[in-house]
Amino acid sequence: MSKIKYLFATFLAVAAFSSCVNDFDNVPEDLVIIPEGDPRAWKANMTIGELIAMYDRIDNIYVFGKDDTLKFDPDAGYTYFTVNQDPMQYPVKSVSQTDGRLKISVDYKGKSFMICRETGDTYKNLFSLTPMEAPGDIYITGRVTTCDTASNIYKYFMLEDLVDKSAIKVSIDAGSLSGIFPLGQVVSIKCNGLMMGRYAEMPQIGVYGFRNDPPNAFSPKVRFEPGRIPYSLVPEHFQRIGLPDKSKVVPEEKTIADLAGLDSTWYGRLILIKDVQFTGRGDGEELLPYDQMITIEESIKQTGNTNKYQRNPIYAPSTYSVDAGYNIGFPQSREISDGTGTVNIVTSEYAHFANTLIPRKEKKGSVIAILGWFHDKNSSQGDYQLTIRSLDDLSKSFYE
Image 1 (spheres, rainbow, N blue to C red):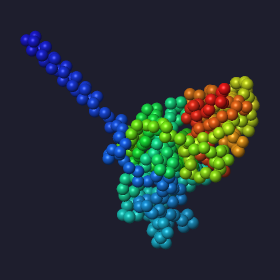
Image 2 (cartoon, rainbow, N blue to C red):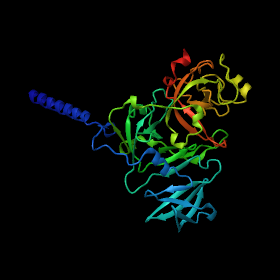
Image 3 (spheres, one colour):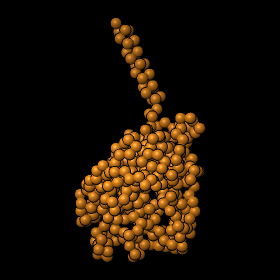
Image 4 (cartoon, helix red, strand yellow):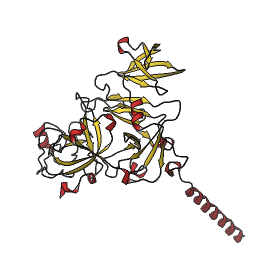
């Protein structure tokens, strides 16, 4: 009897081990990398630049085919819409307004859908959402140019097109994305079902999102904006192709003066600026006191601003507010110059190097950075801004 029990137990152990081996052999779908040249790899049928041009809509909206763009006439009270250059006027079914958002119901090509528009002056054109829809699948392919290991990049990566070098920010609701989408990785995205949206006037790929913070002096935000893509949707919309190749992530050299002549197709690109020096200025016009770290009380006394250690000469002082009782969380700006102009490097207070002293004014070097754009609601115009991925994006001469 004991021998039978022993044999039965041995059989169960072998069966359990075999089951475990099979489980580990089955690689989860979201971890699969498609080899280069594999017929299963999604092939781009649109560049990132073309995608942005087609779906980054404010007053118009792309709908189905290549040339289907609905246009509204505000002077007509949104009672009709036209398509492309066709003078035919199609009636609008209904119009409603909620929370400063105009909702327009239309019928087109046998389909009924709702188009939304921001109406308030505060966020007009700065934030938008447009669904990416088409009769067939929409694919873009690019190479990841960012790395989040220094925590200055958070829950997104930048994707640079393999053909025209245009770029787009891709927001995913997961930390440590570099473990899945490392620097130099080629990624194809199936865009159908995702959103093209503007955040502070800079386009990005995400999902439907709505910001509704409790209104107060620090955060009076009620708006529609691109949200982060849930990680559960990654296997459906993302495909990694081949092994990452960092050597193919090459920034393009520019001067700061060059930035003024660049258009929105440059948003998100990786650039190199030489002969740079930090001016010692932060968000304000005053010079930061490099040789001393001042207290919160002294900072408030000097600036009238209740943000903790705002004036300290580090990359990103804490944004803790005495009045609000929490960290506001906005990136901190540090001005640089190359002799042709000035621009700000912005850094998250949660970056690993946030408390590192910025280089002294007499030091010069090269900077590699993501070229971003930000249009604050309180400003009449937007500005270029730079984001470094880590301190490795600064040449060693800054700290020698």
